[in-house]
Image (cartoon, rainbow, N blue to C red; front, side):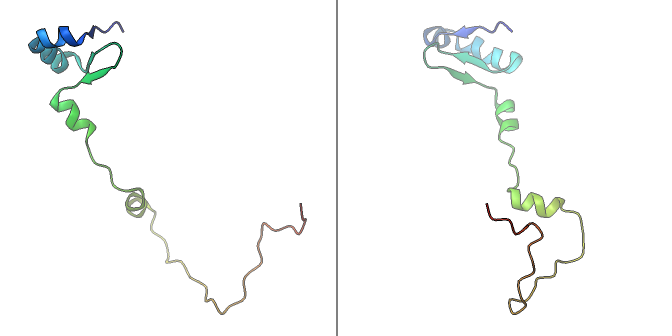
Length: 88
């Protein structure tokens, strides 16, 4: 992909073409030392789509099941099935 990199001076002088290319060809790179990208409004809106928080997503996509039974704090702590008794 051989994309044209606009110098700042060139971008100022040819703003209309820069805007047209951003719309037709996609993001345009401006600057060689400090790079910038010019994107069309449509592409910017696609990039700004909000996503739900991870917790909300998990709740919405979690398979339905029976409610979890929360043990009472008064009950003794059950044995840890991963504890093999070998101290390391």
